[in-house]
Image (cartoon, rainbow over the protein chains, first blue to last red):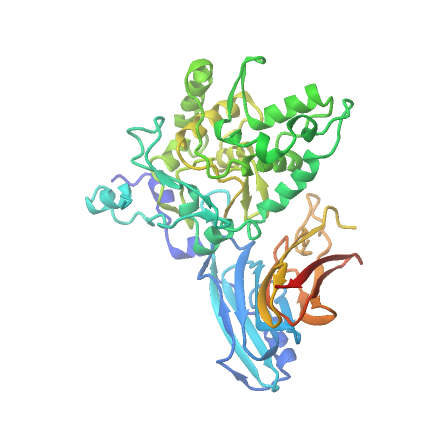
Length: 138
Length: 285
Length: 109
């Protein structure tokens, strides 16, 4: 097949062009975690973050968090201009400590969920979500 | 019955060279609200006979979460606009003191099947009309009200409302008789290369659907899902707005929404999808 | 006041005492993030819904602090316990001071 300009464009050259350069976690993002935990130890089990591996569009990315026994779950987009996404506080009538929502991601980055348990301990989960650059119309 | 995928057959036959990033459209079934069964993968329409081996709705080219959003009217944020249009349907506007419901009564009853056959010929006006044109004709002639902007939110929401009550029904636009001249004009536009990138609609949507264009999964370009709630701009998008966007993306001079060229193109593209279910308002990327 | 803001709720109308039910909420709101610029290059100021709460008969189910990273037309799905017949009350707080509310009643099955 002759390599015309058209062919190259349609072939989607390379993951970097498709996904864009990943966005590093900002200092503000790391601070947001420490503010929430007060610097306490954070366990790696106890909170589940469900998110797509590749976001169809960074403007509306569906995610779900679940942390049985949690008082609150903080969600951060580590590479966004401002890392805060949401904080869910669960009251006595919450049937589960879980919630789903749709978020905006400025680029490929880690999304972090930190759960504060009723017993004062913390747990954290992280998901790397690739945010793509579309070929046409974004 | 096992669905055949033409592209897989071609791939294994080595007809498509390796190196072209390709992804199978996902096999899945769309049932909205547990009730409306959608035909999203079907036999080729007459229009595409010999050109496409099967019709595949754009729904199959989207990711898992996006597909799921369309399966429930609450998750489908396009329905917010349908709700707004329902209010507009019952609101009196114009000097004649009427609302849509004054003549048409209940939208689900009176508009069922309408979206499926548009664009179509209007005998009195002797022209091919899109839904937008018909809405404005009704507004100006019968309601003596101001016309709505062709791609305005109000208009697109109204088209979404009218479309929503035809969901599940097969698209069935006429291509012969008085519309044939318009249809031919639309077909010519579809296959004409334009712009800096010298691309025609067919180059992507007929010749290369299923391939990845950077990270976009190219669909067959049907419009059965319009108006579309796009995740990218979190609002409803109309057919002509999308034509305009697509043409701009090929860096060509685009026609205006509502122009005869776009009306012709819409008729032709709609006929390509004859047989697929009306999905609008659908959810896409 | 943000224009055309419209809350919508999907909650069951009846349940048995102690049942766990799934609630979905949506509100049409642009959630202007404060990151965008207009055609003159000026930053469009942030204007979002910054908090959402759900209560049942006055007791808290969920209280969400929202940031600009929540998508336009904020959507939430969560589970609630229904101890008795009563009303779910949903409240959204806008940066511009407006408060939007919706309620949904539950009868015992």
